[in-house]
Amino acid sequence: MSDAAMPATASGADRIDRLRALLGTSAILGPAELEGRDAGWDAANFNAFALARPSSTAAVARLLAWCADEGIVVVPQGGRTGLVGGAVSSPDALICDLGGLAAIEEIDAETGIAVVQAGITLAALQQATNAIGLDPGIDLAARGSATIGGMVSTNAGGIMAFRAGVMRHRVLGLEVVLPDGRIFSDMTRVIKTSAGYDLKHLFIGAEGTLGVVTRVVLKLEPVVAARATALVAIADAQMGLAIVRHLQTRLPGRLRAAEIMWRTFVAATGAALGFDVSQSPFDAPCVLGLEIAGEDFDEAASALENGLAEIYDELDIEGCVVATSLQQAERLWSVRERTEILYRLHPRAPSFDVSVAGGAIDVYLSRTLADLRLIDPEIEPYVFGHLADGNLHIVLNLPGPLDEAMQEDVERAIYQDLAAMGGSLSAEHGIGLTKRAAFERYADPVKQQLTAAIKNLLDPTGICNPGKILDTKLVL
Image (cartoon, rainbow, N blue to C red; front, side, top):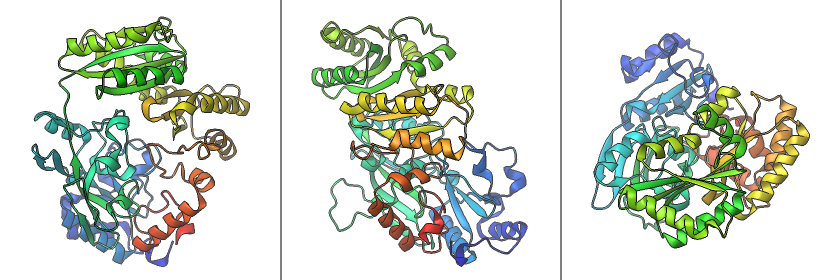
């Protein structure tokens, strides 16, 4: 870290007073005001000397320019639901909370776009767009707390990524305040643009290390009239993919979700939610959660039942339950979405988030689970994910954090052959702090060099979310 980014010599109280003069008293929270507030997924999110909540792009720009002059590091925060330590702060840091920029500026039904501020939650945007027959085209379990700015910064995916893309595919335009306080504005509202470097993509997935996202233009999709849900007992991922391919051919454009859960995961979440996990489909090696769109609930349910019936005997499907009501559908989906149950069973359980090409999932998982058992015979991880795009979540049945040597062994088991298989060591959670060592060991060396070069170019003093993705000492 350069001298310019070293902690300021002024006392915390003095800096807080000066920040309040800059942005207003109500926009700054000191340690006393932060105490007792929910820090989100990681208690270290609130380790900073203060939290600033600017209410406009101009205010964010003033804040970052001031921090650049003072050599104060800035940690941008949204919903604080990230799992990789991307929002963790330190005592010398100032949090830039985007909760003060939570407005929907425009929804254009004719062109199917939304212009929003970065602090709005996904659920709030879904509610507003669904009311006029549109949808953000992306969904995830943390919708009630995850913010659009945070989702842009991690390039979030979710259950609809296989059909509507990840955030990179949803973003048309972007506004970002750079580390020196300049405002990069590319609020494009069209899909087609070939006017030189498309620089907005530098900031999508950058986890706040290159600046603070303040406003976003999103492409919207037509909302579906109704959905039907089923849980299907399957033998493995290959069988699940055969079902997915059949439904995509039989019901073009109607498959909305294809979530796979291995037995250990279903046994834990299903039992906690009151399901009899000794009965089909919960007792199968894997369970496939499906969602089909339709004109109304009955039509969608019938289409899903008929589609599965056509291949039931051919694939030797072991069991199936199709929801008969919206309430039952929500209950069935809760088996997949209530992942916090795992972390209640194993506090701070180490979790991993990888992408594997669909046809290689079973081979990859067989090898990985065997290697994990060699590390510790008691390891029986919870595995689940988005089957149609190859995104697997692996949560160890151990409390965290692991000691350094075991962490390295576990990462080797999970990451060692992903690149050769065309996969990724992070599918949708980002790198943050917890995956930084893995990024340094397993990411392409030239990619790491270019990442460091871009960081140095845009943030030469290292004030924006230092230490995330890359070790600051190695960058500057």
